Length: 160
Image 1 (cartoon, helix red, strand yellow):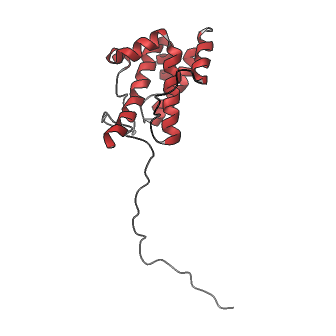
Image 2 (cartoon, one colour; image 1 turned 135 degrees about the horizontal axis):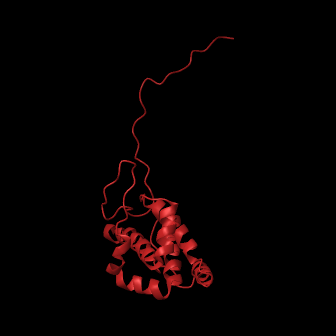
Image 3 (cartoon, one colour; image 1 turned 90 degrees about the vertical axis):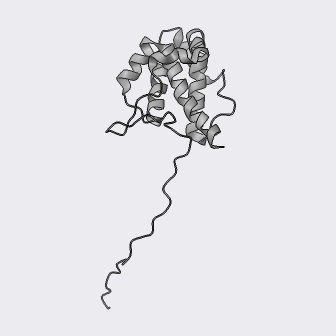
């Protein structure tokens, strides 16, 4: 049996198209990235009055805003495009938030959704900050998350 020399590639492989991430622009406001690759929220937590309708709904019916946020974000993550219905008012997430509100624990669901949103958009922060924002000012948190999702949804309309 003869010994075979290993075959070595003499040329580098040709470049290929980079991997495309499904979805819209995840930094539509063009926020600068920090050295760790993360960025700030596109809108401040206290800037919730700039979206007065969402903020008012979050004050009086936070379960609806939470349910819509969760559904819109889930649709973007799983389908790579916005939910044409804008998220259902009466989803399971909405009812869970409503039930936990009676126990004063709805902020836990908001904290989880805020963390998911922060991860998707590469936003600076952590679980402790998510919990503080959700617990201390639920309507502001819901509005900020909604506005971040809305920026990605709007980026689709600008492309087409």
